[in-house]
Image (cartoon, rainbow, N blue to C red; front, top):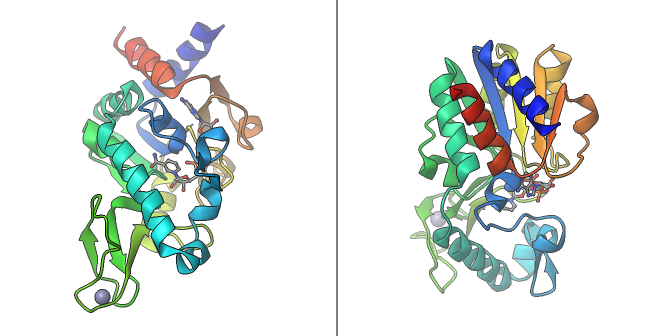
Length: 242
Ligand code: NAD
Ligand code: ZN
């Protein structure tokens, strides 16, 4: 059953020149990095989805920074997995290729992918709440302070905040001329990321979804592969090389 789906996926890739990939926390789950939703998203009795907001930070910057430091330390201990590496191979295979990631962990770039856009920022950057200056930030115990004197926050996009317009525009423009959209390990409930595959589908792009479970995109997909991203994507690379 699975091998027939893998073959179909490989077939989709064989004759596609231009491929757009949207990734979410699920691709990094196989590296041991917790996702936001489900049991994995609970930290010291806080829901991850409640900590990743501006109001949580304004209420208690210390606890939010602690949570980010905890997440940074997990990411620093983690390595890219077979799923990340498979996307490096796909980038080499496809004439035109772009990954848009909702992840803030930088693991896709660490695996060696070149065409990666970050939609939700990067966990190893801090940004001034006042002047917007950004710095590299890694496991500092104190809340970082900008040279201008103001407090700095993690340079990530929190719930309710806008995503970078240029990244979104480049993604839509890429989908306008691509052949295939692949969505990997995202619950597809966070906007505007979740709307990109729908946009592609409305323009006649083929859609493949890789996830452990069903998501709002499952019914729209031309092909669903249920299971672990690392396993499925390495099967795909083997299939392409075989
Ligand atoms: P999410 O937690 O909402 O959903 C994760 C999805 O991945 C779920 O649909 C789940 O079924 C699937 N999944 C889990 N393990 C998988 C696996 N091994 N293989 C395939 N699929 C698997 O995450 P999201 O959709 O990315 O969106 C929420 C936000 O979470 C994003 O804004 C992102 O910035 C943030 N986030 C990032 C990281 C990271 O950088 N690694 C981690 C947690 C959350
Ligand atoms: Zn400043």
